[in-house]
Amino acid sequence: MTLSMTRLIPLACLGALALFATGCSKPEPPRFHLNVVAAVKARVGAPTQQQVANILTALYGTPDQPRLPPEVPFKEALIARAAGPVASDIHGRKVGLYREHCVHCHGISGDGMGPTAAFLNPYPRDYRMGVFKFKATEGKEMPTDSDLNKVLEEGIPGTSMPSFRMLAAEDRQALVEYVKYLSLRGQTELNMYDTVNDFLTIDEAAGTAKPDSLDKSVLSDMYAPFAGKWKDAAEKILPAGTVPEDFISNNQKYVELGHKLYFDKASANCQQCHGTSALGDGQLTGYDDWTKLVNDAITVADNEGNKARSADLALIKEFSLKPRNIIPRNLRSGIYRGGRRPIDLYYRIMAGINGSGMPAHNTLLKTEEERWAIVAYVLNLPYQAGGALAFEQEQIAPSRETN
Amino acid sequence: MPAPPGELTCNKDEGTCCREKLIDNSLVVGSGNGVANVFVFLRSKGKTPVRVHEDYAKKEGTEVVLDNVKCMFQPHCAAVWTKQKLMIKNSDPVGHNTKYDSSIQGFNDLLNVGGAALEKTFKAGENKPAGISCSIHPWMQGKLLVRDNPYFAITNDQGEFEIPNMPAGEELEISFWHERNEKLTKASGDLQLKGGVLKVKLAENQTTEAAFVFDPAEFGGK
Figure 1: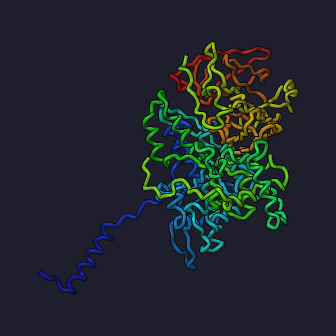
Figure 2: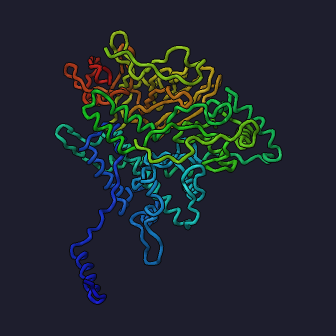
């Protein structure tokens, strides 16, 4: 039996009406996750976790409706543009930028565990510790807006982080503000686990947690130190001398001095980690800060005295990526993740690389000549004979690594 | 008595570091079963500054030394007042770096061989000890506590500590922190240590003593 066209259409309308009548339920709005690994490490139980989640929502809102605690110096309007579902406003300007460009790797909570993360080496950044590698500021200070913008503009060579140069500068700035927002939220949460005894009265056995008269000043202590650090970042830029005038014309002099310092125990001593052939094979058993948190949580959970041992270990496994060692950079590859200008290498070496084992060398290398000599040597290494390019570890893209 | 501690994996600069067995010092129990390296310190209540006894004035500006000796931190646990200086030394013939994992005033600095000590001062006290490590020799781990008042001590290997001249006549909260158990709970006579905190009121001109005896399992031991 055939249905004529004229009869099909009403049926189709009926079908469509039926759909609307029964209702395709709208998907639930996405929610932030807690930093479960940190909660397990701090031995914070479920009732307290719920309280922490409530406080975080009160302070920072949700992925669709972000808000900022009082006196946090971030730009709310830009955060609002980056937040929420992907859409265009009435002028055709895109909103929901974070969800459009970042969430698949960096995750809705900025935990670096988006759906693609397990396939990537290195893993995407987890913003929640407030630790960023590629910046011009000293030691463990926060990056400046300029540092974060640079990462978006240039991408990170040698990783899966692409350049977002095709976005307008204002779009990139909106993403920078949103990353800072996610980072501050994460730092607040970690601080709460560290200080939980100070502000929550917990009766774990009874399964209740009562906020102990949470007044504004107690709440402010949770985030104010970190907001202050973000605010001060611009003042913490490493005072870098300018590239010497004869850096190129007299490059050989710098390279020779750099070579000497590279191997000198009384000086930079780079060979201890980067290896005698600069292949990055000097110390292969270390971990970066993000992985250390996972390992520390496993140590805490993996205790015969822990009544919830297998549950805790299962939680950690579910909410973390498989731990990997951190490998010192292979200096012969010519790939510089934070930028390949001499000044970029100067910042990496003198300020150190936060989150990794790379220490700051500025207290040790006191003269500008020594500092630029190391930079010159590093830039020269890929061109030196006897050091054939070695492939980066795990060059072949891994299949989804199950934990 | 807990099981004897395990050995650390020594895999770098073997000539200097691995000549002797390196023992895991995350739990150090002395000959008399005393637990060493428990940080004992006075918690501050909100924003009220702690009353500091004038005797401590002579402690201002003094140095606390953290040394790298045979590829281990010496001492394993250190505590420093914001009015003191931390001097980080390297007594080894190999390079080290010292990484301090504080969320607000951390650092990671290189220590060369035969160089001068690195001087560090701190602006703020912290709620609990944070980790010290070396990236070149990853088995090197320690703990550093930074406080904004001088009322702190670290137990010796007899498990003993003493904090003189504490504020009397008010209820004090004293933290007891060990890297293997941050929430020590035990009673000693009238004194109740709960979740790592002891609430006690000290009488004027008197010494209050307490002895806490723990089960090895409470330190993750067997």
